[in-house]
Each structure stands twice: as structure tokens, then as C-alpha cells.
Image (cartoon, rainbow, N blue to C red; front, top):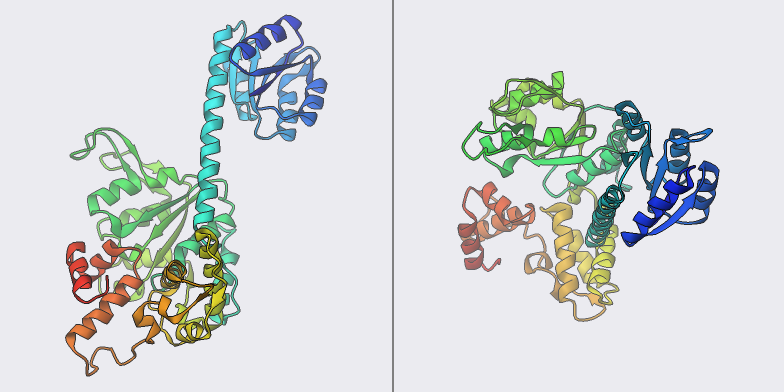
Length: 444
């Protein structure tokens, strides 16, 4: 790393530079804030040691100027006038750490080691974010369709406010994508977006996952655990598939929304929460309330701003545009010259009902890009059921065999689900049984 050393005492600068260089880094000296700012504007630095008392200059004011030029600079303050108040103020203003004088070379090397480790972790995070961005198609939240345009307008108007938002719509319509975009446009952007998948865990584990627990509160609770609510502090808590939330947890979520308070499992001390809540479901919550499976007061508390995402079948003007975006993404990802769709493929897309919505469209395009032998996706590259049309005669009450009806139902549920485990839960069977049924019906 390149390290800037700012101190008005030449002996301190020299001692610090030697410690920096023996740790394998480059040290550059500056006698005051003015010289430090000039160096910082001309060169890149990873870290800085800055004296709080710079003769006539105030080191804390210099700190603010340095961070204005290089916000990511790790600044370590040191001074002979060490005090808790000075340390707290320096950290509040953005300092990375604080070392009192007199200090040892080992203290300098230790803090540089921590800075280096944090830089490596930050680089890994940036690399992973880049890989995730490349792995997923570009999120497209533009649409000429009136239903979609109206839904997006409502969501984006509510985004900068603290209002709770309820996103409704069939599986695969992009509810989680919209939740991320709302968070990105919110005042909580600097906080985390934390997702809780409500059907993924048992009631006991879901409560602990959501609110946290204290050691010994149940079998297996070997240590205190911070829940997702605490992890989302200052940010957004996204409750996916809120319609699956167990009745025993619903009053606790209501308290969180009404009073901004919650308790960890096994604890009676209330904790304050500063989180914005976004919830999503593919269920008809009003019907769930009438059936007694969902609390009416919780429903109204969640339903402050309601956004209804239409299915892909209701967005015909978006279909070709979205298919084209997926084609470009997967062609680039696979490194294949897949340049377009045959006219018959686009006709098949228009006839099909898309029960799995955007998720199914993405899967179909990815499969087709993999199987495509030439530069154009052909009808033979599509799943048989899609290539043959939407099979409108296969419906409940139609004159078809039970096997054909079961095959169509399984296909639609799998297409509308994130994975086979979710599809199995919807069907009320275990994943192994679903696998065997798909094999038997030729759907695997």
C-alpha cells in the first residue's frame, strides 16, 4: 500500500515511515495539511497517518478535507493528547482508527495489517458484485403496458417515503426485483436490503431468523443470534411470500410495524427497530383474511401502499423486448453467436400463456441459447409444450386423461416456482415424489 504520513514533527514522520516500509509498504511524508492535500490530489494513497495536533492546524479539520478528496482513504489518527473524547470525535468524522502517542512500530504495522485485510475483503465484495451483475440479466423496469406502468408509478412514488409497501402478483412476475429497486430509490439506500423468505423455515426457526434469539432459548441455541430485523437496521426488510407467515408470528410482525419494537426469542427486553418493510405475496391476502388464515389488522397495516404486478400474459407488448434482452444476455454469457429468433419461435411465444411469467421466460431463453446449434433460435430449441402451443384444451373439466391433466399441472407449477423444492411444497408432496412423477410423465 502507499501510505501518507502527516505530522509536524520530523522525527515522528521518520519513525512512522520506517515502520511502514519495514511492513512492506511505501511511506510518503507531509509536514502539514496543505502539503498532504497536494500529494493526495496528485497521487493515489490507500492509508494515512494523521496527527491531531499539527501546530497551528487542527488535525480533525484536515481529516475532513482529506476525506473530501479521497472518501475511501483509511485515516489513522495519532496524538500525544489521547482521550476518549478525541478518539470518538475522530471516528465520528470518518477516521479508520486511533493510536495514542507514544506509539510503537508494532502498533503501526498492526493497524496497517488490518487496513490491508479490509482492502482485500472489499475487493472480494466488489468482485462478487461484478460476477453477480454479469450472471443476472439487466433488470428492465420500463414498460409501455398500462397495467405495468401504473404499478411501477405507484411503487416509485412511494419509494422515497417510509411507507410500508405490499407487492402482489403471480409467481415469477418480478416482485423481488421491484423490491430491490424500491430500496435503491429509498432514503434507506445506505442501509442493507435484508430478505426473509417466509415459507422456507419452520415456525420456530423462522421466528428466530426474523427476530433473533438469546443463548439457551431453545434446543440448539448455543449462542445469542442477531435476527434479520436487526441486520436490516437503517435499511429495508423484505418479507417474501408474506402470505405463508405462520399465524403465531403474525402478531409479532404487527407489533414491529405499529410500534417499531420487537423481542428476540427467549428475551423479554423490547428492542427498537428502524426498518422500512416491503412485503410480497402471490396469494390473495383479502381471501386469506376471510378464511381466518391471516390477521385482518396485519393485512391493513401491510397494505398501506399496494402494488399489483401483472402476469406476462397481460404484457404482450413487453414479451418480444424481454425475450430479446434475455437472448443477448445468455448469448454473451455462453460466448455463442445467438443473433435472433426464428419467426415461428416468436409466434409460439405469442400463443403461449406463460404460467411461470418472467422466471419461465428466462429459463426458456437460457435453455434455447444452450441448445441452439446455429445463429438463430429455432422451434426445436424450445420445450415441447411451448413449441406445440399452450394446449388450451388441457384444463379442469376438459375431456382429457388424468395423466395429461396431471402433467400440465406439474409443468405449470414447476414453471411458476423458483426451484423444485418450492414446487413440491405447493403441490403438497416431497421433492423425491415430484422428481419421480416428472420422470414418469417425461417432464424431467
